[in-house]
Amino acid sequence: MYNITLIPGDGIGLEITEAVKTVVDAAGVAVQWDLQQVGQTALEECGNPLPQSVIDSIKVNKVALKGPVTTHVAKGFKSISVTLRQTFDLYANIRQVKSLPGITTLYKDIDIVIFRENTEDLYAGIENVINEDRVEAIKVITRQASRRIADKAFEYARQNRRKKITAVHKANIMKKSDGLFLEETRKAAQQYKDIQYDEMIVDNACMQLVQQPQNFDVIVTENLYGDIISDLCAGLVGGLGVVPGINVGEDYTIFEAVHGSAPDIAGRNIANPLALLLSAVEMLRFLGEHEAAQSIQKAVYGLLKEKRYLTPDLGGSATTAEMAKELCRLVACK
Ligand code: NAI
Image (tube, rainbow, N blue to C red; front, side, top):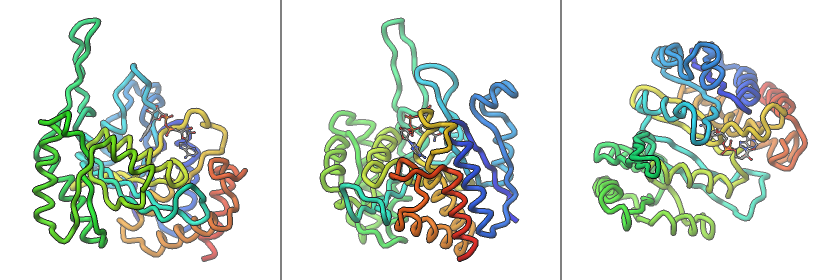
């Protein structure tokens, strides 16, 4: 029996976590889900958007599956997702962007893995109001964080037989901060001479990703660029509904999709649960439950290939619950 912290989040989070839970249960993995509320719901219920009970639960369980959490624009509490990543020092945000069977886009054979530094950069949250007409945000880049994300990416590349790492930066303008990031990625590259290494300025990288995404293999980058590039890459393979993610630290791991709480479709039972489900597949692999992971992945690929029970973002008309039910059926009769 695994004890796993389950954070449904809000918006579409409630619908998709429920769907994912049923599919994981159908795969026969015994999980005791420790349900924890964060964000606006937690703020209303106990006066804190990130209650201590959530932190305690993750500390004990070490593994969490997390839905998206709404963060208000230009007001309100600090992002819960960012706070969790910083609290548990989840320094690597790993996002696998892959062409999937049955999903037709402008591109074929995309297989990119993004390693996004997850703890610093402009996300350090240091914003100073100098006066009513001037605000300064501080970008924090450290040697240690740059090196460990670079090492993580190279280690992954070696273990997974990937050929090339591209460091994405803006060191032509931010010569010192992005310069330090590059200094460390270059040092890491020296230690992994079996992996090809190149560098690309972020604006050019965006253009190349749209024109020739197949030229990319593994990308290592800072927090803000990684956030933006992840969504861009999701758009290449069918959208945010199909791209999973993992936040990795030394001691804790939180699995969550790339997408947000999608308020535009929340509560309508049409959100695509696959991004979170594929994150859960990675979680099962992490736990050593390879057979269950494989059977869920097979069911997902089967559904996509046959274009059955798909949610509207994938061109279908199924509800979240209908898609989950069919996935449970496929997984149960594997
Ligand atoms: P979003 O990712 O929530 O939505 C962008 C677009 O993609 C929307 O049109 C949405 O309907 C669609 N979409 C996203 N996930 C989908 C799914 N599973 N199935 C079908 N369509 C899907 O980004 P947005 O609108 O910029 O942010 C909404 C809120 O989410 C904000 O408050 C933001 O701060 C928060 N957010 C939270 C994240 C997290 O908790 N990890 C990550 C990103 C955003």
